[in-house]
Image (cartoon, rainbow, N blue to C red; front, top):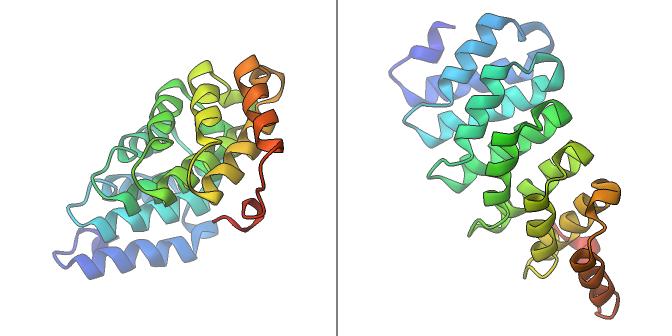
Amino acid sequence: MVALDDGNTCVRRYACEALGKITSKTATSEVINRLVSALTDDDKHVRMSPCRCLGKMGEKAATSQMINQLAIVLEDGNAGVREHACEALGKIGEKAARKEVINRLVSELRDNHEHVRISGCRCLCKMNEKAATSAVINQLAIALEDGSAGVKRYAYEALGKMGEQAASNEVIDRLLMALGHDHDDIGQGD
């Protein structure tokens, strides 16, 4: 645990990664709190590592503090950190489907970086109907026309997991329009 406070960024990063590899034995409140603190590190690589580790710990280890801090990290200046935060929240699943998290995920669907948009869609897939707000459904409908096959693929999947709540005229129209286009690339996205 001392390594998480080391002055060397590589030591802090690899300490987080080591904890991630032994998560079944490390998901104590002390470890979780230290990893949550590492999400605010000055180094982007150090911030990515606890995202991966907390994601591996998943729903069972998820605390309110962890979820709240991961939601804040969705606004990080580094796209890789935002992507990993989305992935971690997705692995936490429905337990992370809180208003502030969902609102920030809507922003991720408009991110300039393709992998952040993909991770945002994948995260919403794992939250299922609990993430089905009108803002989410509207942004997923817009994502159906994204230039990225991966974004489109996971937007389709997320809308499907939203259930009946996604059955608006706009969504149905966009889905019908998609049926008329050649989308051979959809199954290849990621």
